[in-house]
Length: 402
Image (cartoon, rainbow, N blue to C red; front, top):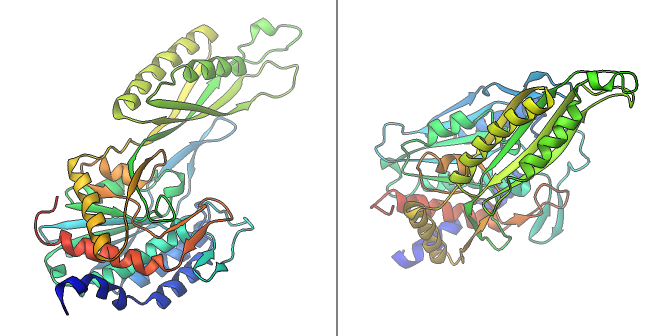
């Protein structure tokens, strides 16, 4: 085989029919983030599938995560287990590959079946986001293991159960596995159906602010009360005023109150921020603390803050850019045109980048309309992207590309 034809020959070694069948089977299992039984079933199937690789597979218990109920109480949210595969942990050069098994479609959602849209495209829950991507990881690594240089390096694979809700039950695990790695690949679907990668990303944070006031009769003695809804409304206007070119603030929901003739003693404000830089993220945190003090004092209420930034902004530094350039070059060798664009979306790549490890986080299938019943996956991209990852890993295994 001539050297210049070797990358194209990779495609022939990958069983596209098996990949498609596995994705269809996996998509038929509901794995909404809250469907613990479905996630448990999926985790065991994935553990069995990845056990064909040389390494140890483990199902890891989720970290404890709390949330605030509509009644203002903090409670523990259940999550599924995460799958981790460790291959050649003693190797000097190691990589981390990540993906998620959960989807945004709960157990009772009507979108449960896979169907064909045309000869190259299927519609189904999680086909693009990201059971197709999980399958790409599996077959890329199976192919990589047959290539020269694979035995000299090692890698970890982490597939979590809670990415769609912020990876709060897996964030620590992701960061532990990422630290010290030479490079990282994450298998979210391409940013565009043509295979375009997501480049720099903003960050995100979710907050729940519980405000406790004092109830009173709205007619007889309203001034004896401390209106939590009014305090929450004041807070909304103040945090919205913090928006700037490098951060947006979205007050999403106020819960609380009861009858019209009762001064409400409870309100919960839930909001999201999207900082474009670490400076914006840190600035907001300090500004929020000051605002909460003002609202607490002016309205004579008790305030409890829950949540914060779950995914820091992901800039692309020189080392990360070299990884993007390598992916592009490998794509060219395979006849794939690879480009990239910045995006406001977030994923586990944000958390990996925060550890200082270069990452490309849209190495999964080509597809689109994710998080909707119109979600689709372009079937030929299963084999295309598996070959792309196998070639990228082979290049990263030799030389000093980054």
